[in-house]
Length: 51
Image 1 (tube, one colour):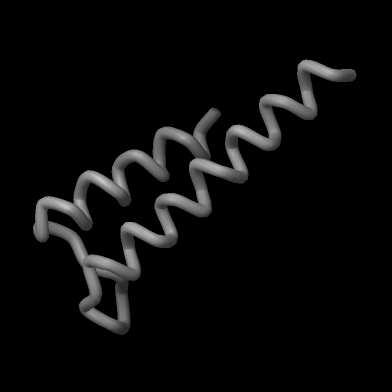
Image 2 (cartoon, rainbow, N blue to C red):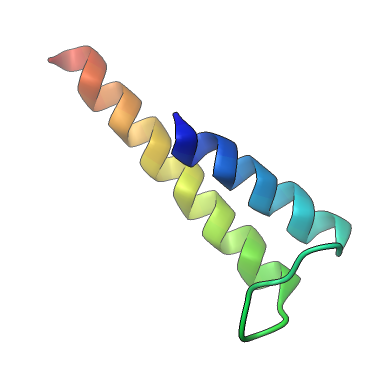
């Protein structure tokens, strides 16, 4: 669940231009990392429900 929350923060922060990926100053990169975090969080939730 925390992956989804952090992913949303990254996507929203990157889209607004207020945050950027550390070391690259890329807001698009931060949005991509946020998207990956959201996908990982969804995968973890689906895996936990199937068990």
